[in-house]
Length: 45
Image (cartoon, rainbow, N blue to C red; front, top):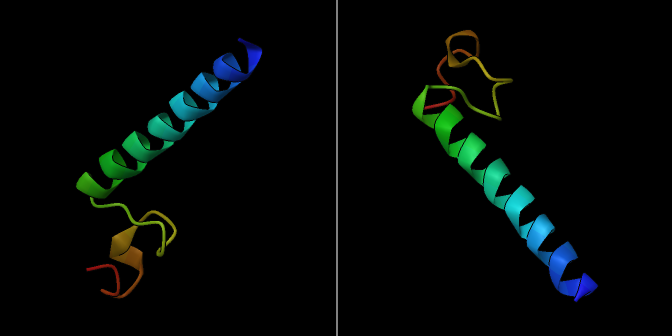
């Protein structure tokens, strides 16, 4: 039972991270450019 609970918590954390990354991408932010595409010289798009 404990293994299932730990797995469920890890899965929830991974899902939250992915949702955050998708939300940031929709807002125009990018991990490759430090979060601000306006400062990367156009390489984000």
